[in-house]
Structures are given as structure tokens and as C-alpha cells.
Length: 159
Image (cartoon, rainbow, N blue to C red; front, side, top):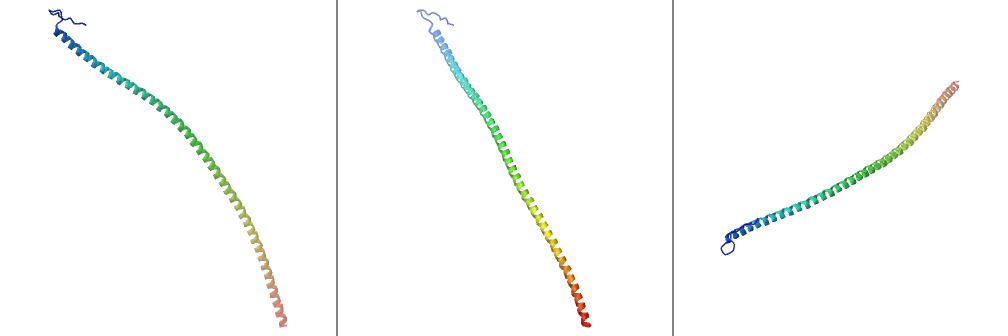
């Protein structure tokens, strides 16, 4: 809106009114420039926030992808650990079973050997008892013959 100025006698405008108007324009212009600067600052802040928001969103997407990769790697590693543990357990079980079978075979052979030796010792003891029995029987017979001989010899000496 354009102001109306009073005309002065020489064909010009009232200087005070023009100066007041210019002062008001200067003040309004300064206010508009300040407001414009503030709005530019605010736009810059908003643009910065938008860039940060975008950076954060990108970081979140990257982080989520990384988390998924880590989870997949962890699952694969866990499966590998479980498989390796099962293989080790199987191998250890087989080794232990083989050792147990070896020990059992050795113990069975040793038991057979002890049983065989015991049978041989038992047979030897029976033979020894039989031999001792025969020797005792022979000795007893020999004593009877000696006694009989002594009696016969004593009787013939008396006569």
C-alpha cells in the first residue's frame, strides 16, 4: 500500500513524512531480512535434520542387515559346532567301544587261560594224590612184608 504524501508549496513532498515513511520501510525491510535470515537458518536446520534422519535410517538398515548376517553366521557356526561335537562324540564312543571290546576280549582270553591252567593244576594235583596214594599203599605193603619178614626171622632164630 502506497502512502499519500502532502504536497509542499514548491511542488515537492513533505520531507518529514517521506523520511518517516523511509524509516518505517527501513524497519520493515530490516525485520523482513531478519525474518528471512531466521527462516533460512531454520531451513538449514531442517535440511541438516533431514540429512541426519536419512543417515540414521541408512545406518539402521545397514545395522539390521549386519544383525541378520551375524545371526545367520551364528546359526551356521552353531550347526557346525553341534555337528563337530556329534562327530567327536561318535568317534569317542567308537574308540571307547573298541577299547572296551579289546579289554573284554583280553579278559575272556585271560579267563580261558586261567581256567585251562586251573584244570591242568587240578589234573596234576589228582595225579600227585594218586601217586602219593600208591606210594603210601606200597609203603604200607612194604612194612607188612618187613614185619612179616621180621617175624619170620625172629621165629627161625628162636628155633
